Length: 105
Image (cartoon, rainbow, N blue to C red; front, side, top):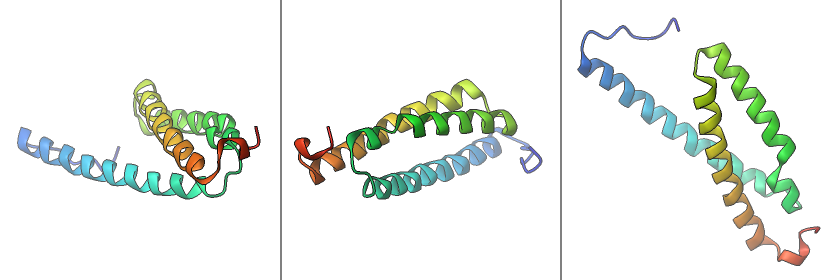
């Protein structure tokens, strides 16, 4: 990666890692906001669970990991965990919004 700072000490390395962690956590929070917005547009539990969309996201991030030099297995594991959490959150919102018998199943 061309924009990576060449650290001269362990303190600089840790400072860069702390900076990246702040950005990553902010991005996870932002992603969560959009996931909650998406839940408002879904009309069934199947749509919330979104198997086809999950597969698309996983293929895309695994490809991106390869392009950007990230570990594909680690990237996939992080995304699977994140998606599992967000789907559970969406389902909870969906269930509060609609009674179980009104979810199209």
